[in-house]
Length: 187
Image (cartoon, rainbow, N blue to C red; front, side, top):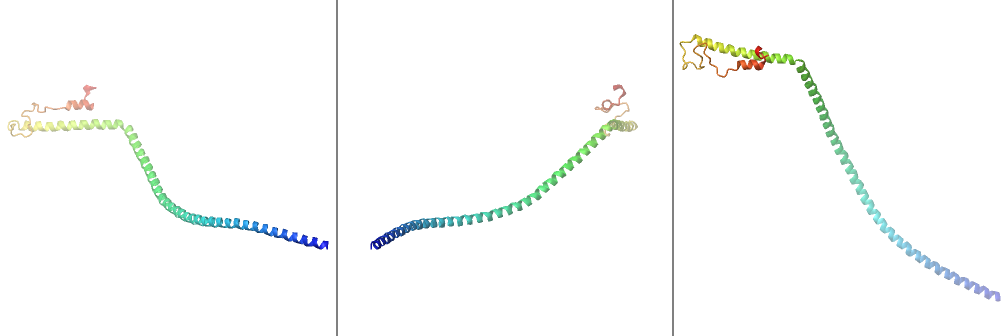
């Protein structure tokens, strides 16, 4: 019987150990449950925040896409403006080149024909002088023909009564000849 008592005591100790083990396991499981509940609550909060971030990210992506489309549209419009400005720039360059060519051509022709131009100016001065003298001669001849019949009151041009009488007060014909380089005495 001794063995039986020891066996009962061993069974009782085992039962008590099993009870302590169950109680300890229950305490640990309750602690783990509290931690898991706390983690679950935290994950619920994080999930809500993630959903909010997801919504905001989606909205931000939509806005970014609309902005990108708007930028592309405006860029396409701006490209046409840039192309137009580039065309205007090329036209201005072509115009400048044309003006430069014309200017160079005129300058070259003038420098080549400088002597001819000065001769034309001199001959035009001579022609004007001859025309002025011709008019004066006509007026004097007219005055000579009407020498005795014309008075100063009847003559609106105040032509001279005699051919040798001088009428011009500001006659610069000799001075014009000197300035034009036609007078032989001035050389």
